Length: 293
Image (cartoon, rainbow, N blue to C red; front, top):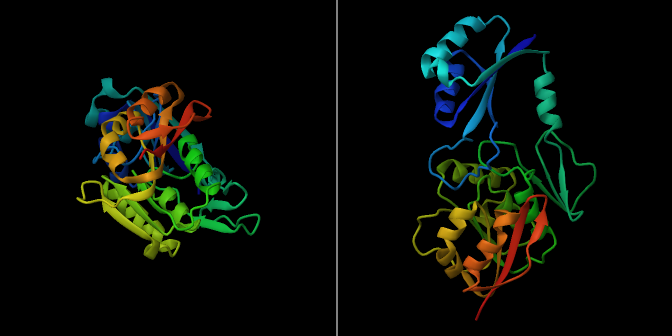
């Protein structure tokens, strides 16, 4: 059966109204993509956040009256707030196969393989994590997450306790547990992220290796390694709190920082940590530090 895909461009405050409208018209697979170039991460805000300019797309049965739907969209958010629209025909199942093709396996240090359920890894890697692409940030495909996963896959985690601060989907926490960390605490302020981490832990039989906590929980544990893949401003605001959670001689791994922001971020943590030279991947940086005595 053929489908029609409607894409409407709008400002961030109109994403939710348009998404709800699409659902009322029996849309299939509503999705959001960036038009503007800023980066967003789950775990930074309690409510859903979107790009300043966002494309809202959905698939519909080809029998739908697009003129009526567009009229309803204009009525709901105002004609002046529709920044662009596109209608295209999609052959049956092509959208699903394209989605699957974009989410194959990811391999780090030739041992950690992350893949969705529908992908069978090409090799029998020693550590395999099943992760479905979802709403919470963290599929492993963004450079900031890849930088953290690469560090985990190259580090001996045996006997180490770790915090994943701003856990999103739980990908870093679960990978650390899979790679041998003694215990991992996944922390976020977004309930959706906490639920996603919990669900992914169950799928991978890692529930016992993981503690999932709201960021406002008092008396968070002190750990050997703290990893935070969030934005610069939250990292700056949380510098003292995060630093208190790392034991003497423990490790700090920060990502979600642009290369041009690396020096500022490292300076914010230097009172507590001896900071190494950043590691760069495209326009992003990973910062590493060891807790001072």
